[in-house]
Image 1: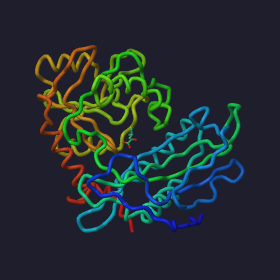
Image 2: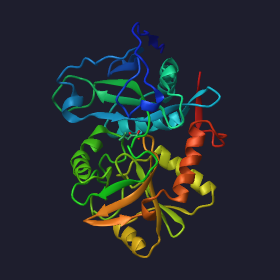
Image 3: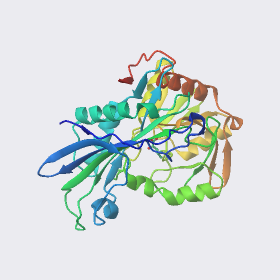
Image 4: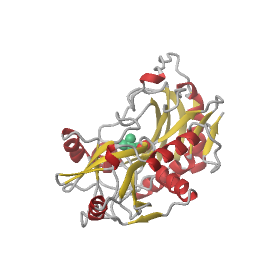
Length: 354
Ligand code: COI
């Protein structure tokens, strides 16, 4: 399929790299492709960024039939633009789409479209370490029909936004509230899929946490409300007594690409990395015994984000005296050096943009 390109005649002013905020400003273009059951995917195009025109009966508005991805493009010191593991995002997008019975993408074509789009928007990648172009591919059911049935019409869209830190704290530790009432996902549900509904289910607790002065919510499993799952915007890792422990992918946890990359880096450094169930009681116990050494989150938007405080049922656990831990910092430095091209990409994770 040929991607039709219509360039804007009215380019926007690009923001200063030192003032970019997460996901507020968008580039000049977007990628769109339509799907129908008869034609399959058709009419791929890169067009000026604009509002989408959708029938108000479109399934996405009523049943939340939507999946998405988040990945970043970076400028290297040698002036090259690169993406971090984009094929992993496309693969995960298809896995998420499969869970919601949305149509599958041809992964090679989607990757080509993504690279073409980023190459057109290359000048929007801010050229400052710590800033990047956040890319948001999303796929949703567009057919105007209120009856629940298989999806006959869909759209795949890619937009992008120049960004800085996701958390206002930057690389300083964030405070997280462990939620003990609402749950984000259950096994057999959509927890492993990156779908809008998971994030919508998180809103109420997120608001509660925000009002109490926390940055985010840490979710417990939806059945026993006992095991640590994830923080909605990132996966979590703990360093307890020298070992790294991260919740295993039980089906209700997002299989993070940054999570997977960090595990590989940590194992490469010789750490014992355990992907297993970890209960909130185990965290409390480790805290009491002085064995909870560090905690951090991993995610595309969040990168590697130190956790300085956890609150569970009105008990506060201060981690590493609220300071960034040694491994958290080392991991942040290693990952960002690869992403921003300051270090040899020995894992072959980066994809160049022409
Ligand atoms: C990402 O890290 O890309 C995400 O999708 C998380 C989102 C809450 C910004």
